[in-house]
Image (tube, one colour):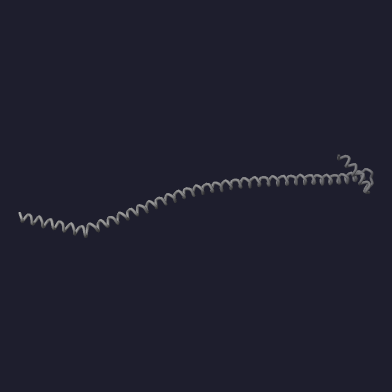
Length: 159
């Protein structure tokens, strides 16, 4: 029994020595390494959470900026449409004014040409009347008083 007891005591001493050795050189460093790893993971999780919050804030800002850009773009488009309509209306008004001016000028030119033609016709009628009267009377009527009389006669006939 002494033999078993000695073996048992030797095994117990070996076991206690092994526990002390493992505690001193393996268990404490492993625990320290695990604590460090745990702290690093906790820090990384905090950093990741902060980055996630920053990303969500940046996304919200981007969405807001996009909405603002759409509003501004729509305002620019609306303004361009208003300007285009105003320019079109101004061009139409200018064209109408120009058209009315051209028509008025054409009417005036027609009246002037008609008057000129009437004056030429009257002059020719006077000349032809004088020639006809001269042939009838067999003498040439060419004095200024004869022309005046013939002009008055033609004017009274043309009215």
